[in-house]
Image 1 (cartoon, helix red, strand yellow):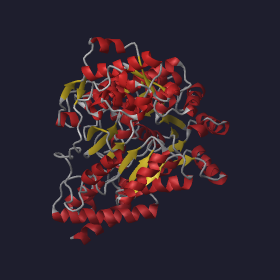
Image 2: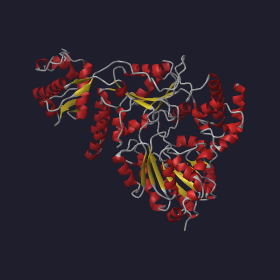
Image 3: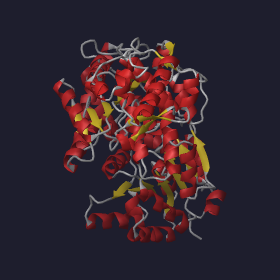
Length: 636
């Protein structure tokens, strides 16, 4: 019977051989587990399958890395980690090497000789974790390697990261993930842990079915990221609004700006760069070398802003991203949550800022309607988009709405725009009825349909050439809404689209048409309540933020430090940057800012003084203690 048979694991769980807590302390330098980490680790180590939903920054990787290390020490071979991005495997493995863990990856960046050497190390039981992409894992050659490992009792665990990619309902669908069912079919005795930061009930059910995880235990952490402040502003001049947001609130800080199109990515990156912001573009259309270089700069340098399509971000674990901004509305709440979750992984104050307008709604509706997908699939996509529209138009707590989408109850957070500055509301039923009536009357007059701008011109009484040409001055609604601003009417249309009382006709140049839900609004059975349009600049971060440099506005440290400690912190950061360059790794892989701040605060004079600092494992203590002490002493 193979050593990793599940019955054997259940009878003699790995925790009987190795203390998980001691590995946590020794390898990673942490004194205690967070949230459900310990329960997940013990369940998987005992041979159970697990589906883990844990927010970005919640410590998902430890849930498979620690069982893998324990397994390897117990002579049970390697864990195979399926990761979707080859580009980030280098940093993931590099981080484990820094912690003293035998880890490797197999991907297309290696030649045949290098790959063969790693395979031989695997077969000798020398590697604790092996990273590979799903496309490689499911090849006959790789499966044959797994067969050999399994026969020798050297295959301990499969960890499937970013598992939402399995689902057609997920926000980053990767069809290659579907083939991973072969792991269960071929290696049924090897436990699997599937992990993601976001998956609603529909997506979770699809993951379970596609990967045959019906017997798996599901672990769902709180989806709340209390350090992130959610803000959604009405779009006027989005580029100017973004500039104002970055310059006022996050100068010289790392951030990500998401745009829908490649062209817009490049335009916004240019505008930010011209304004003195260290901005770089990232999208799938860039030369692969340029794209990789830009990603490396974002990960390795301080204060870089990445302007990107959603092609960027999965697997990014840079801890000090201080903001994520959306200049275009995402497709659904899962995508929004995943993308905003890349901010503030270090637990410090961060912003999720989105600029949103009527055209965003029109574009997203059009993309769904134009999709060749089946009607059932389109219906699910519309439902997901409606939930995001509801979040954008909400006047109550953003966080309550966001968490409710994932099935989590919560109380108003006091840390989103609606909680901090409750919006004034107004009854928009009258202009809503006017807009619907105008659509109806135009259709009855000529059987034609028009876009949002033309409808608003009619209501506001603008005698444009187009209105004159089509004889729309004769409509009874012409000029009827002159009291309302264009911004107000756009808000009304957004709400009508969100309610389903108006639809976008993608086949007719994004014109607007009535729906079955229009009648209730026209009859007055439905009251349309809207938040007042506002052009005020976004509120500053305010209370609870880390201390900021008065000249640059940048946060000084993760924790409050004295003047002397701050000098030590800055010297430690400079030293860390040199080490990171030598190792070709991001600086945070060497030490997080929080660890450096703790060192600076403690001002250690001996190796004993360094012990117990969070993030200072045994290998890092051996590798860096003398240099850290030298820097501290030199700082005075």
